[in-house]
Length: 159
Image (cartoon, rainbow, N blue to C red; front, side, top):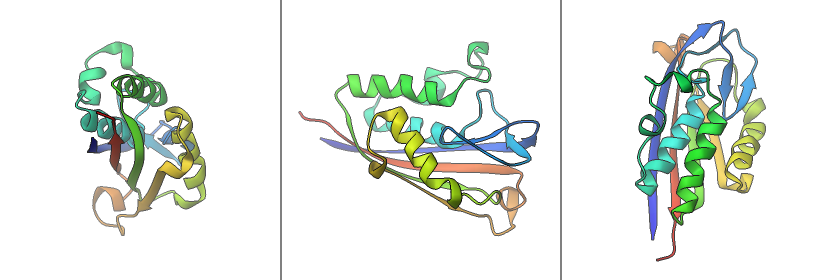
């Protein structure tokens, strides 16, 4: 059996927070505002994996109303969900992700981010791809007021 999952997340960028994408801190004067560390990429990945496996979504696992998840490390959240996905018999085919971010330029950090995600999931970096798009100076993304991420995953399971 194969299934695909789609994940999405968006956060406002604010001063005084770190910009974390895929578990990697990128140097920038703003970071994601969120209940956890705000890592939109890992949140989108988590939702894609949970959706494909039929196990829920990130909000059902880690409700933002619950104070125990305040400033939580999104790598730990992803790892918790991934353990449930793999315990249900699923294996990762691949992840394909898009980040919408005007600044900073993502390309210099791409391989480090791919390796970080692969390490959390215990898969090969070749199974992970991440690309970035700017907002062409338009809207919340283009004005560096927000960051968005989308992720599509392919999961496989023997019947």
